Image (cartoon, rainbow, N blue to C red; front, side, top):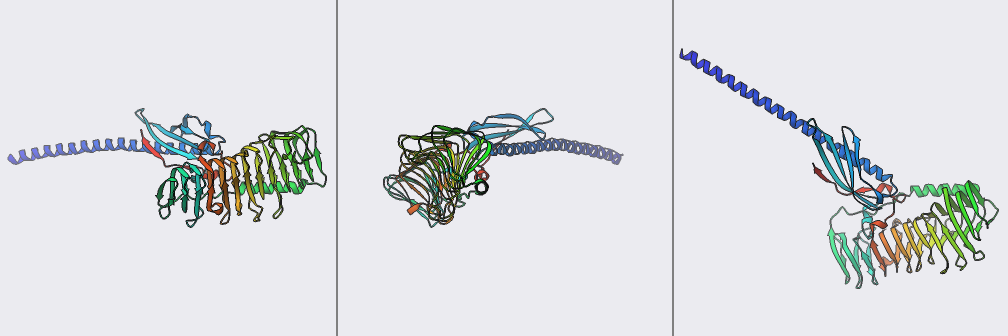
Length: 468
């Protein structure tokens, strides 16, 4: 009888234990399902936020003006949506937050956010001055040179007395920034910001296309343009093209010269030339010189948005694109593309705004881009790939705003002497290893909108994640 009672108690105990185990297992299973669902939603939200980031970067890549970026909400992606919140925007940089959203089975919104900054130009353009071909290079800041902003020194820099760097002077840990001037040195370990290599393909393609037009349409007849000219997508071919008088060239098309193009640039002409492209671009393509305005006191030239100026100038020829004016007249060029296969000179107070200037490398002594003279102003993208010393020259009181870039392999040097620059200077090495009597100020708002060859350098600062 006792054995029967013990057996019954044991059976009841085992039933209770099994029930408890089953209940616990069910509870754990339910918790696991709920946890698994939460994990799944978190992964979905993360994927949506990352997808939103890539979507927005692609929008920026194809956008011509970053300064007017606006918030965007409720963009559908997969099983959720994402919002774009613009925190700050300039022409060269956008800080933004992507918020990914998924609604779960309990009608709750799961969120994940990522905040990051996209930069139109390479990391090197975050400095007022970036320089450095190799660690053995040397640079001196001389004669009251001031750098307002951060400074990158690939080698050793000597800041002479009376000179200053107002931001941080960065250099590799085995180099230094020294001297009697004013600066704050910070040594950093690798990896170091690298000298960006421009993709010259867009310019090479343009040069090839322009040369084909010259070869096809250049003739042996000169053309003197003294009345208004309206282009309608056509090509005007000649040996030399010369404009004079009070005239306007408008519309869209090509003016092609087997030798030279003179836009109110000879001493014998006078008057006002206005070039106003509409419905497309106007291309001025010269096998030899392309000159804009003379040094006489009776000519004025205005070139409005949409003009291309090109000089083929064969190697060892003394030919160029020259833009100049008299002290009492005007030369104003806005939103143009100026390509000199050998040489570009902007001088004598000419004013070029929001434009791209590009000089290629033809390996001779007259291969350079020069902006020179008091009152001469250029803004936009100033790009030289000349291997000459000096292959890029900004001097004698000239003022430049935007991106100043020069890469000339192992032999190209930049001369900056008595100049004012706002934006960013990114150059590999300097003539005589010095910057002289100049003021260079970092200004993100002055950086250009994606010049050709730099589009692949859209970069992203470190991301900052936040679970919501």
